Length: 421
Ligand code: EPU
Image 1: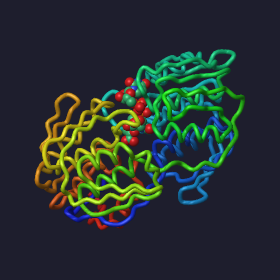
Image 2: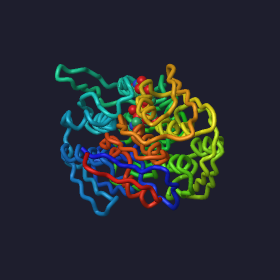
Image 3: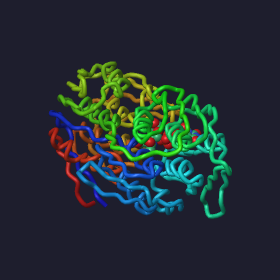
Image 4: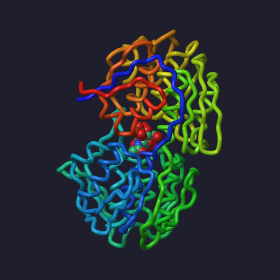
């Protein structure tokens, strides 16, 4: 087991390059199965969830070769229709994308219940509804696997209205519908940048998808995809995490290689609390003197404020002047980080889905434990802003989604080490 030791209280200065977006790289990697050809993916983030998804593809028969630090050739021609081992599926929510990819290509898919960060119940009923609307038969087997089977003549396009705005279900239905006969429409679709990235990748492979990024996506079924070269979009949550970190520690940091449009909710909230944010074509500079005020935030599907930035903003608002409220609109179980922040002197009351945060003059160092990926980022930010030494364990969560966190923070002047616990 390892831990981070953070000597807080240092302002951050400099520039940081943002890596590729984990949450679009995952479906794109699994989407290569639908291509049944060779795809070259670049700007792939070097994080453990991506390593696990690549291992999963290998187990299924894909040939995978890295040709650069962030570039990979994936050949899925020999992938068979077997179920991936549970030890892979149970660790990662993104493995659900195997269903859409396999059902589309083979007319059949088998998968155990996917794992991932624990925010309470994370059902896949909307995915299942979508597959059923395309004609698939879904059964739950005694061995714990779901089995999805297309009817005799294959899947057939349909009009699907999503009861819940779901990133995963939108992408999964898009994947399954690529080869469905006729036209599929997904209404009330999620609009996240990763949906657009996924649609762009599939279109580069020859799919016919329009409307990604709006709440109505249209997929015209085709016979076959082909390989492509594709560059993954930058990670908006990684970018937002560094922006929040410098707001909390003070200093001036430019986050580079980003799409500032994706950052609008975070940018608006930082400005709202009194932090200076300068936006240019592909970078954002945040300048902070640590004097900022409380605010109210509600997390919502994109373009709303992202739930994956909630814990990081909680850390920031602990040091704001006045009282803040963060209302969680996506997950019921997202507040597990609160008891850890309280060890650092935070004053947070959680009532149902709202965190009421009373700003304190300083956070103090403590031994804290990450319980999910973004909770980990929250504790690192709190540690960087605290006035003494913080140790953070649970690094396996942070490693899922932050490439070179230590190196990137050190290059900005943070005093942070990773040691054996
Ligand atoms: N939901 C259902 N039924 C479904 C699907 C979703 O009730 O069939 C609910 C979920 O329980 C949740 C809400 O709908 O309350 C939204 O879930 P969504 O399907 O949009 O989330 P996801 O696809 O499982 C992705 C990201 C998460 C991110 C959410 C929301 C991946 C691999 N994961 O999850 O990322 O929080 O979208 O934006 O893309 C992270 O990166 O830290 C992370 C957790």
